[in-house]
Length: 117
Length: 117
Image (cartoon, chains in turn red, brown):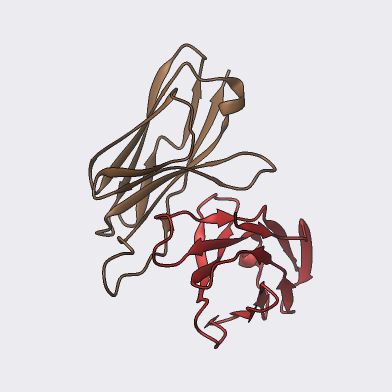
């Protein structure tokens, strides 16, 4: 069975600084997808970034980038130039690739990030 | 309306009541999902529908009854719930990931905060 571990329950960062959130996962699959979702106090779960396991290049979306280490089964999220609006719970999630159970997203427990002015 | 919407946003019910949660997606997707988010636990996938057919039921108690009349609407019928069923219930949708060229990224609604007294 797949598991996703986020070892940092809470983190804080000063506005405009950089922060890295950790995520490790356990799987025997070779084809899979990894996601970071953000859930602000409004509760809306918002996709931040997505990585296909077969791609060696790390995904980036504006100020958000990942460090995907497939051999180490590590998928960390880096937020550059942190903004107050980045304050939220961040969830790392895993999904099997083609042939896996439809829609079976496996989430970590989340990291609560606070951006301080 | 855009994206994924859920109603009601808040619901308080007694253990003997019957209520329904509604989800609607405006993204042209074919797959819809129900998740349960409890305090201090990872999100748990409850049900998956693909083209109106249920494809996953993660051992959810029968007091939760899903209904998917079409690819845009998803309901969760609730009856004789227990206090431990109090949680945030999230709906999500995605394209059918088995379609060539489609993406399996799930897009979430804002959730229904359910309190069972």
